[in-house]
Structure formats: C-alpha cells, structure tokens
Image (cartoon, rainbow, N blue to C red; front, side, top):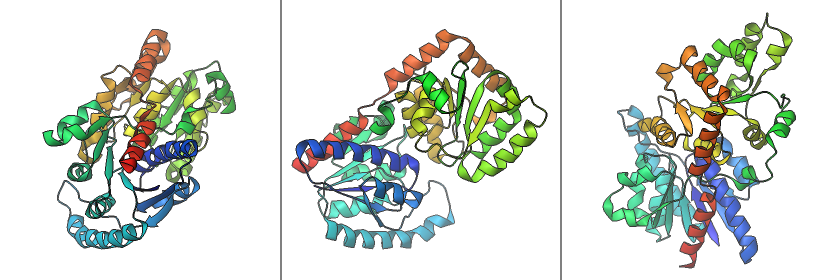
Amino acid sequence: MRILFTGGGTGGHIYPILAVTEELQSSAVQKKINLDLRYFGAPETYRLLLNENGVLVSKIFSAKWRRYFDIRNFLDIPLFLISIFQALLKIFWFMPDVLFSKGGPGSLAIVLTSRFYRIPVIIHESDSIPGLTTLFSQRYADKIITSFKSTEKFFPENSRAKIILAGNPVRQSLLSDVLEQGTAKKVLGFNPEKPLIVIIGGSQGAVKINDFMMEIAEEMAKDWQILHQTGAKNFEDAGNELTLVFKNSAPETKSNYKITPYFGKNLKDVFAAADLIVSRAGSGSIFEIAAFGKPSILIPLKESANNHQSKNAYEYAKTGAAIVIEEENLHPTIFLTQIKKILSQPEISKSMSEAAKRFSKPEAAKIIAEEIISLVSR
C-alpha cells in the first residue's frame, strides 16, 4: 500500500502526519499489509523526524499565497509552477494509492497533481477557520476531515457530504504509558506536592510570552513551580535574563523556575506533571492539552494567518476548558489573577479538566487511518 503525505513544514502540519502514520503502521501489522510511506513537500527541520518514523522524504519547492498584498505572492508564482513540474515527475514514479494532505505552504501542488493522476485525496484542516489551501483543495478531495465542528460552515454546501469531524490527530505514543502526576513531577525534578505551571510557546518558542514571563518570573516562583519552554533560539537569552531576575532571590524561589529550549521526548511527562498549561492556541497544542485533560490559559498569536489562533482559542474556551487572554491584555495583574483563580479553587480546576477531556478526540488518528485505508480499498 503506497501512501503519500504532504503538508507545510511546521509542527502543526508534521505531528498530525506522524500520528496518522503510527495508526497506519499498527493497522498494517494487524492486517499484514506492506506499507510504503512517503512525504513530498518542504519538511524544513522535520525531515529527520519523518525518516525516523518510517516516512521517506522527497523535497518539493514550497510556494505560499498570502491573503494580504505582498510582493512575495508574485515571486511565488514561478515557484509554484516549478513545484507542479516536480510533483508531476515524482508522483508519476511513486504513483501512490492515496494522498493525505495536511494543507499549508507547498501542499497545493501535490493535491492538484494527485487529482490529475486520479489518485484519491483526503485533506485535513486543523484549525477552526480553514486556510486558503484547504478551501482551494476541498473541491478535489474525496474526504474532508475537520478538527472543529464550526469549520463545516466555511465549506460550500455541495462539499459538506464529504466532511468528517474527527479532531486533530495526537500521537498515541504520547498518550500511552502516562506517568501518575506526582511521579512525573519527580522525574522532571519538581516537588510533587506543589502546583506546576507549564509554559509552552509552540515548537519554536514565543518571544512575546518569554519577555512577559521574565517580568513576573520571581513573583510566580514564590507561590508555584514553573517549567517554561523558551524555544531553542531564545533559550540563552532567557537564561541570562533569569540570572538577573533571581540575582537576589532565595535559592528555593530560584529553583522553582526552570527553563528548557524544547520539550522533546519528555513531552508526555511534562503534560502528565502539569497542573495548569499556558500555551499558544495552535490546534495541535489545544488537542494535546485536551487529551491530557489539563486546565489551560491560551494566549493566541496575534499575527497568525486569518487570526486562526484566536478563533481556535475561543472555540475551545466555549467548552469551559480554557481561559483566553489576548496579547494586548497580557498584563501581570490579569494573568496572575487568572492563575490564582484556577489553582486556588479545586472545583474550578476540576471543572476545566473535565471539560477538556470531553472535548478531546483521542481517536482522531485512528479514524483518519481507517478513512485512508478505505479509500485505497474502494
């Protein structure tokens, strides 16, 4: 069974592909199917990760269309034509049984070329508001899979029969063999009896959140434990700032605040240990937080395309699982008040946790894998 993946080169595109890959590989073992998994596109820094998970990568140029006026839109036109030519050649030689597209820059050329060769196409939209690539690709898709119920209204009526609400795929390896919260805190070097707040700025970190946290780091560390992902590029600067912030602090206060460049293989332990998660509002982050049933404060990225992070955040917050603080309202008093409200009142924390679990869709990757296999078998 030859399965082709495509999608933009961010964690929000690649990690759902890996989640689906895990389910396909598991199903293939049970059904004694030989799999040939390929990714065509621009995986950026995720090439090695795809290879490690059994997906061979073939580079295709990435062209992006922006909703606003930008000279790069004109520069990307010849790049798009080149990517179509690359896709025509590479897909012809691989000739997959089905294409699974996560959308994003670079994926449209693969979708169009697959349709030209009459290869079945499944597209997945992570966000509550579909991107331009998804809206253009939907007319060529055999199946459209969404993460949020509200996304359906953005598609034309004649396409809605193809829509399946499955959620955003979360890797099963992240959800299996999860440690008990106290044990996870110990593994990460924290006191199991004290609340732990996890700060996640996305896979690359978030400078705005990092700078804000430096302002209130000492005050937070007096009452709580904090594990803060700064992003690899920001790690050294954040470390230098923290040294100044805690220069006159008690050793115990200083030890309550830890930073790390990136949550890699210990991400599962981080989620398990957290009492509260502060995060950007990418769909991947929201569905991972929900899968672990954790209360959260979401700070949407203001410059996200089509303001999709803000829409994601409020769509999720409707369930009662999260509180949203927009960047322009990110002030110490507001932020600390919300944290105290959640962590000092167990009934609020419990209610948010239960709402997160109700929202979560842990079967998303399995549903998508089954849809892929059913298209191949059709």
